[in-house]
Length: 271
Image (tube, rainbow, N blue to C red; front, side, top):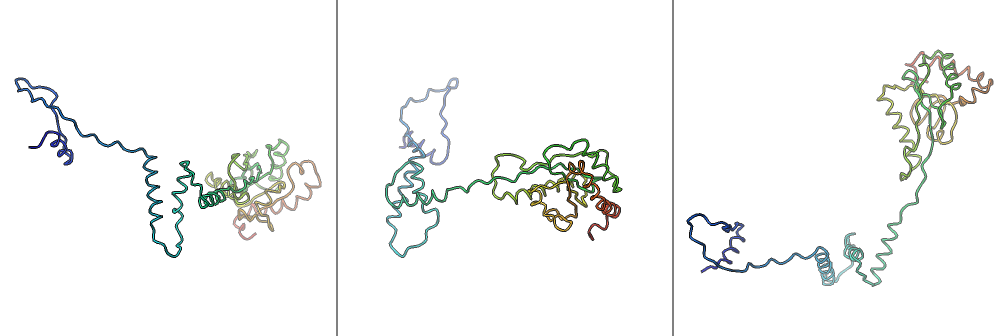
């Protein structure tokens, strides 16, 4: 005859839940009193002990492996040794010391690089011509008036006054840098692409002033900027033009070229 503990074990093995009455129904006969001890389930071993057991099994399997010609092991073959190091288990043998030295060599990080730094004051004339001034501070009132007079003399219909915005690179400090020049170029290109979403259809670029970093990024060659693939002009800064009458006179032939290019936007590709 099957005892009550065995019956409960059978039910548990079949996945059935055994229900035990807790309340006595009215006029029901009392249940027969019985006492038994249920078998205790073995306590689950901690994760660290299971990991130690797996590591011991891996070492035992490696010792029992048949000898033969050396075969290149996959990178994960050193996982037990690495795991032992993380657990604080010192192997002390020469092979483990070599693996540790190799891992330390691979973990050496590359030397940090400094990003390129530049700041531009940027505006757009009628959504067509980009005007860039390499400088940290906003333009003064006299420089803004001079720019407006130059554009007016060239027959370029500009907003009065032009509103400049600041573009600064890098946008955030303490960021990891791997390729300073390439990252700065991509950042400037991304900024220009973003202006197209605001309705700027750029045809030409005017740069007032020279900056070593900006000159490297733009790649000015024969009246065009290689970085952006647009024709353009780069000349004296607005501060120099404001103070030098000779610089203004030398700029007059350029104003005539601007007038021709502005009045014939369809010929930009032929410039």
